[in-house]
Amino acid sequence: MLRFCVLLALPCLARSDGNEGCATFTRLSFHSAVVGTGLDVRLMLHTEKDRACAQIINSTAFGDFNVTKRTTFIIHGFRPTGSAPVWMGDLVAGLLDVEDMNVVVVDWNRGATTVIYPHASSKTKKVAMVLKEFIDQMLVKGASLGNIHMIGVSLGAHISGFVGEMYAGQLGRITGLDPAGPLFNEKPPEDRLDPSDAQFVDVIHSDINALGYKEPLGNIDFYPNGGLDQPGCPKTIFGGMRYFKCDHQRSVYLFLASLRRDCDVIAYPCDSYRDYRNGKCVNCGTAHTEPCPLVGYYADLWKGYSRGKGLQSTKAFFDTAEQKPFCIYHYFVDIISWNKNVRRGSITIKLRDKDGNTTESKIDHEPAAFQKYHQVSLLARFNQDLNRVAAVSLVFSTGSVLGPKYKLRVIRVKLRSLAHPHRPQLCRYDLVLMENVETVFQPIPCPRLQL
Image (spheres, rainbow, N blue to C red):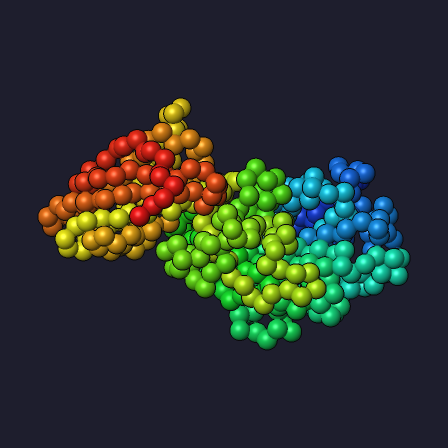
């Protein structure tokens, strides 16, 4: 909660409104946040017809709105400084890149701009009522509830849920991007986003220990890096404003990355992050199973979900890289050892291709127990996907600084890709790993029949 409390006290440079010509997002100053703002909801329509110029629309003026197309509403959250969301333009453009649709930015900056978070939170149901008035007129003109997708960020996720509840869960989809936690935690379903608010509700939780909501809220709930500290985000207050908002905003940037599809961010349904890290929940996506769910825009393609029926609170975990496109490539490292006594420790594995590209994974979240003739399967996560692995290196460590150095005697090590299960599995036999010493070897294709 430190980040949440301090965030409210940080000043920001003043910005003024600039609404001449094409409609632009309301820009207010920190002074406006201090004195408070009354609620004023503006709907700004973006279409493929004129991407560079948004139109103000309302329940009596539809402009170029086309009721036969899909409509995606983008709803922001708390704005303690009055500034416009830095990600808004990219999100609008990304959505229009994937489909010719109506993109409606719900600008409630006048209302969300305040240093007193409860004041902004108290206006969420009023924003939902404004949206209902507009959607009612959409329906009159021939639109379909099933063709509506709401993307809500922080407080905006709960606003989406309130709208969905007004239509008895018949909206096509709601995406919650790190739904707000403060003042919503432990609230009943009618006072927050919940799985019954749309035909499909997907949620990304990226800051569950501060600004976000911890418990599941959707049909499928994604927890990047366990939903806690996100790679690449500052770990201390010395990171400035990024310390307070980086984890919270990571959900938005994960969704943005999914629109570009430079790579697919894959998640694994699981009961806990620990089980995922220990490789107990990576059965989907293999040669004889259904594909794993994708994070972000294409989450509703997951075969585990049936439109109109849905699933209740399936949790899915995954790790990410520090920077976009955030993808991680998973391998299982299977090690059979023959030490007489149990050896406990961690493994660092590095891959190199024939061009010299390297990628490394430290599997050190908890010590593995290597027992004689027993296979230990470790889940390795790499930032790069190397198609042809030419060399592998392993480092074994017990983590002991003052104690004796140990050896790990390996009968066989096998490397198998989860992202590409049809790739040949790679093996090496009869290795002795000296503690904290890198052992490099060239792998060979594993025999088809393994003992």
